[in-house]
Length: 209
Length: 209
Image (cartoon, rainbow over all chains, first blue to last red; front, top):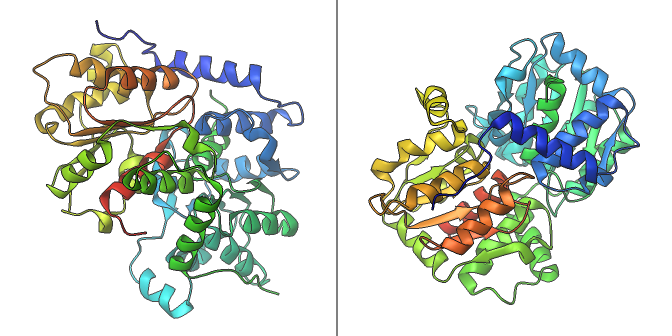
């Protein structure tokens, strides 16, 4: 007997988000933040993630305004840039990952850092007003914070800081939260990753559920 | 003051895996399974994930032998196919995602299912002996199980079944675990997703840590 299952994508989303809203503790979020948090929980398959999500004041508004103005989205990993649903973007925004750009391995060696961190150097010319999404590498988030210590470095509009893992993830996100060079969103601790980061971008890009 | 942090990728991996092995309960896995589980925990940033990971007997060996023999890897989502580290593959294996192939939206409409499920129809000609990795869509895993109910459908060598979420994820993985049409690996319940799935592929592809 073949398996029978829900095959309607719209119904699947609706039912998923209803389950999340029934189970998760979302009271502390404003409506814009709530929509982002719900989608992050959805991507993680994990009610309880909301306890680790932090939005700085005005993050959702700044990030959404940037995308509506046509800002690019800079991503630290191809799994992030590939995950963004192009049809949700309000202004056909460029989605850019420079990790595999020419010269990055050599630049990383010269800078004595990871390729993920070195790749951010290519963001500078278009960083002003951009949405930055770090969903994989703690070294990329640390390097971004160090870049932004230079007052001459262009300021992005907002930063999603969700690197994942056991070395530097918790520390780099705590550093972003302490510095708050621009409005930002983080997942505290070890949790994070490309799927959660993509979910935040997709929620910011469009209110459609 | 710029932040100082670990910038050596090799040291980051070593320290991460040491932390996971110190904290996670890995005793019930054999050495091949343990290596896969450690990398899945690493991708999720979550000690405790191991409690939800199930390997059917011979899964790791079947999946690794398939890749060493040059088998393709079929993925349900671009975030999965993009995440596979090509340099780890033992035989320059093709990594294939058909979700954006020509005609998939029309085929999905005709089949009255999701694009994720319809895209699997394009796998049939090369499915024999392949490694299948479902890291996103429960509908894709259910459709795969239904395809394999047809005795004329080619058999993959092994299946990684890790769709994520709130509708069908738990159920489709339970169905795979009950059927076991070929050796398989699942993450029980709602957890799963592209990062965890990619981690399993990358661990199978190479023992290098």
